[in-house]
Image (cartoon, rainbow, N blue to C red; front, side, top):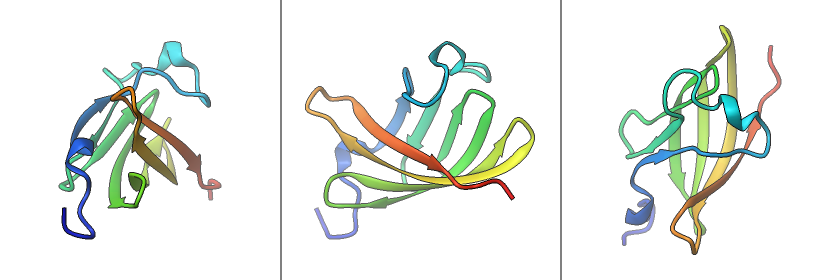
Length: 99
């Protein structure tokens, strides 16, 4: 795998089934909660959040920068994802302060 490329096991559409920061019973408010990691127009949808994401490879997985809106307010943030031994995508996110 060339340096700077995402690990092929990260590519695809991933279903978000739980988070530690938000109410899990509302993740699907706008439809199935998903994040795409394809390298082309990637998106994140969960709760009342719609965002475009930019994914960059790291040694352990990928760094994610997002920008979009949540409940009609602009927002942005960063996060990271990695593939767990269980074959599931694991991640963390941090929302930037709203302006």
